[in-house]
Length: 297
Image 1 (spheres, rainbow, N blue to C red):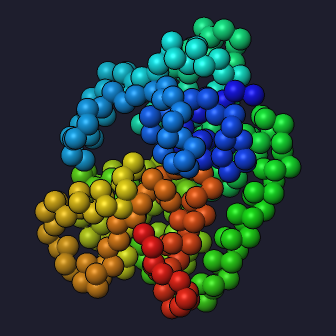
Image 2 (image 1 turned 120 degrees about the vertical axis):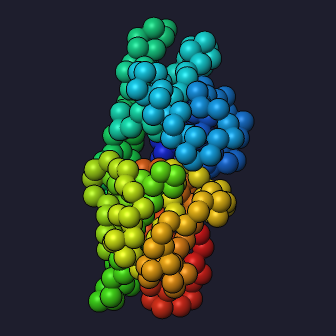
C-alpha cells in the first residue's frame, strides 16, 4: 500500500505501526521520525509567510480564514505522480492542516480514486482511536491494539506515581500573543500528570483569553506550548513579550515555574508521543515522585 500523510500526527502513527516503508509522501510539517521523513516528498506547503511573530501569524491566519482561504496548499501534480492508495488527513482544525473538503476534492480527481481517511481526535481517547483507525485501514488492527495497550500502561504508571500528591493549578498557553488556552487533549494530559487545568476545557477547542484571565486564575505553573513551536522557539517568543500588569503577583511567576515545552513533540500533535508529554509534565509538576529521572522539556 502507498500512503500519503498530510498530518505530522498521522505520519508518527504510521511509523509507530511499523509501516514507514509504505509512506510515499508527507506534509511540509512532518518532521518525526527524522530518519524516515527526511527524504520523503513534501506534498503541502504553508500559505503563511515565514519569519512572522506570534501576533503577526495570528493576524494573517484570522484574515485568511475570514476570507475563506486555506492556510495550506496541496501539490496536486506531485500527489498524482505518487499514486497513493490511501491519503490520511484531518477535519479537526483548519488552522492545523489542509482542510478535509480540499483533500476530498483532490482525491476525487486523482487516478485510482485513493481512499481518504480523516482523523478528528477531540480528546485523548480519540487519539487511541486514531491509532486503531489507521491500523484497520492497512489491515493490521491487532498491532494498533498492542500499541494502545503499551501507551495505556505508561499512563497508568504515571497516575500511580502522582497519586495522593497535591495538585498544582496549571494554565497551558497554546498561543502567546494573543494568549490562547490549550484545549482538546491538553487538559487531560495535565490531569493525568497530577495537575489541575484552571482554564482549559477538555475535549473542546482552544480559545482566546486576555492576560487578566491568566492573572486572575493564579496558576502555580504555566506551560508555554504554542502550537508548532519547539521549546527553544517558544522560550524566545516568550522572552520577547512584555509582562502584563500583575504578572509577578501570581505563584508561577514568583516561583519560577513557567516552562516552555516542545509542543510539536509532546502537546500539539494527537499522536502516541502525547503519552511521553504526560510523562514530562508529571516530572515537572511532581519532581519528587520521579527522583531518578530528569525534567527534559
